[in-house]
Length: 291
Image (cartoon, rainbow, N blue to C red):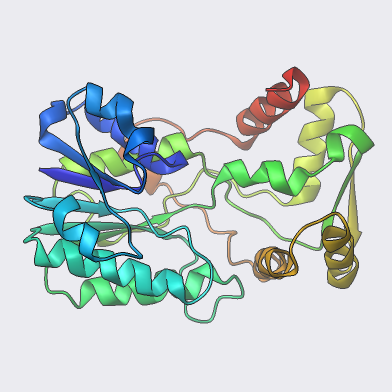
């Protein structure tokens, strides 16, 4: 049995959908914090069980009988993220899983300026030390976060943010497809993968130019200092800790941490990854329609 964690999240839900195209529902189980949110999966015949990384006792039941476990990285900030990821790995190992997969990041590194990356690097190392076959999916930077970076640019015509750098914005749908392939085709992606990224890396100046073209209205890229951006973000209601977290992303981008592109994702999924323009068009359509 395949067990997937985080199956109601943006990435996990898409992975399960892709797997259901490849496998019978009764060959799959999901570990979720809220089983009510997975009611549709249960109705399709997927085994749904409560599993919470912060309550390791629940994972024994959630992972019972698993041959393969996909651990979607914990959506936790701070040191608790590594503790949670390790708990999930330990539970999968204790359940007798013959293979463990983990959703890592292309920029995983102990010296990264963006807080999640040292966590990913440490989790990869911990997973490799368990002595079972594993895959660390080094996913590209999620393109959906462009919605946050854009901010009010569509309304004001100004994309205001600290200095940044190129980012290989990569769509959840493509990464979910790659994960489904990795889960069902053993040996195709083993160990720590190459960066699983879209084909291009764009900075926010290029994003602003695309928005101008898509909307037919000028969107200017305005660079502000880190301190100016932080003060304005906190004044708008962003918690200070969240502002500092986001600043880490900009600082890492300036150092080129997210600028890498690689053909592996395209090779695995068999088609060109979703371009940034398509992601931006969807964001614009959603905001215009008010969805």
